Length: 200
Image (cartoon, rainbow, N blue to C red; front, side, top):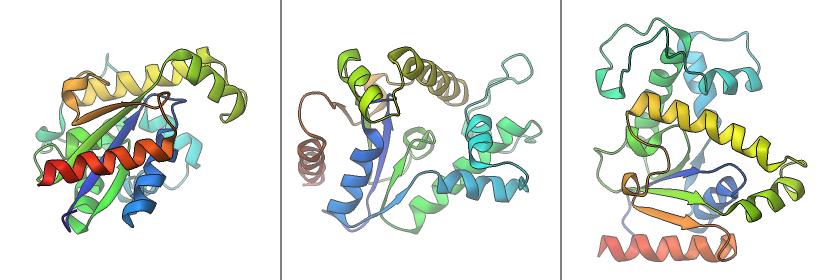
């Protein structure tokens, strides 16, 4: 595998995407960036009076009646509203981290933010409802499928709004994997094999 590589992982809630991102980082000996990006972005904005849960809520909030669509490429526009500012600050942090060295980035619209950079591989993790419902009960603190879908709705609205693209649409990613078809460890190995093949 080439020295400079960035893997972005987006996922439906309840599929094990965070675990898969951790496995990829461990197997490739790369840094994994997840919620650290939220705190970096908040610090840049001077937001120091919110806890992590509040920051995550702000991160996934969209106010369509008060904001016009503005993709990341329009960075020169005044930030103004806090949710918009949070997105732009996170996008800047994502690009800075990607430029600083090889890594795995979980979520944060990183597949879109980094789509103009070389050696970036974007993965989307999905699974059927039965698999997600089982994991919701066993891994996600007893969450129901309906609760998982509510979180997915927030992610989709946020992603669609700020990128102008459709969250989870296969053509937006280099690879879409179904977490219910094999163990996450096996899927991580398959992803690494796929990336190696692309780099040859």
